[in-house]
Image 1 (cartoon, one colour):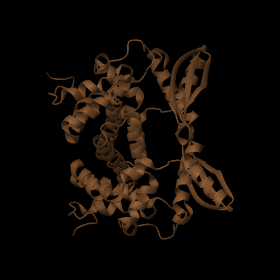
Image 2 (image 1 turned 135 degrees about the vertical axis):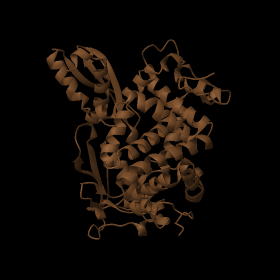
Image 3 (image 1 turned 120 degrees about the vertical axis):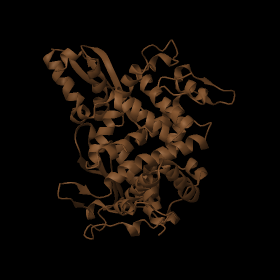
Image 4 (image 1 turned 135 degrees about the horizontal axis):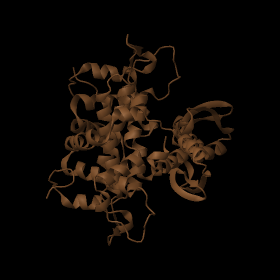
Length: 223
Length: 223
């Protein structure tokens, strides 16, 4: 059996685990949670490393500020969620059927978990090859990314003015405490929450939620 | 010639570059900055990946929250600065001689740049082996780290009360704008700045600077 990336997996159980969302996970007799969150932790780190490795070599004359920004654009939650859809990962994810719509980034999370599974199964170089040849080459236009405006908040404010929508950014909750405290900010359009995100700063959460909201706006209204 | 980790480097120029702090860097004729910041960007990502890989396998029953926290403790700026000192990296770094004391984490930065250089020179598996056998095994006690209290702000407040010192946390500057804005917070003891750090949130910057300040307190006053 070959998988969505066209290679023959070794340890099938790793890949099954990668698609097991926490809402459909379970607890073993000795209190261990079984879901894809550990693999997501690992895959997130491997993805960051592979993309850093790739960008470092691809742009030998650019400074670390440029490399950092390009990586943020490639591994953003919005991009990874879109990737998960395009690759058909979304359909493979096991979610609790009662949680409809509650988890908005399970796709990107599962994509990262899948990277973790490939890494454990096949190692760094293989994972790098898959990511570069099957993902970055196919789904990312680096020239477009380089010029892409990152300030989604101002883009969505402009859109709201043009389309005469009532727009608000609202801090709706805080999670964690101390220096791990994060703010949850919602984008509210005509009184309806269209997107929300959390971040360590309110400004950060505003940008992330603005980016999510932006992706829902029809292409025809974006210019 | 063997280096501080006991292996024979291939591409010496990479290692020289890893020790070239930006204050002693230079600009080429075509406007490219030559210093260790690009290697630091790469090494930071590789270090995160290796530590994630290591912790994932070392703690097969722990959840991703535990893995994330343990990694933060291992790769914290304070730990990396200490490592740089212990390994003798500090003495190899080229710094502008006029910048005395201005750059407090050049050691940790150079350690990360060195990891980037090893990775480019020898690949992922070799870098992993060096990090596990020469660094984590030698310099980290995972049991101690697991139980280590992370809230340095409250630790330093307790210390100040016990030692009758006047203590303040002050936001002294902001850098960047929009969602990349960071706050610089100083720890001020008896009117003197003893440490400072930057972070996306004030709380985060307070914790990071408190951690730096804590490391300067004599062991005898820490309990």
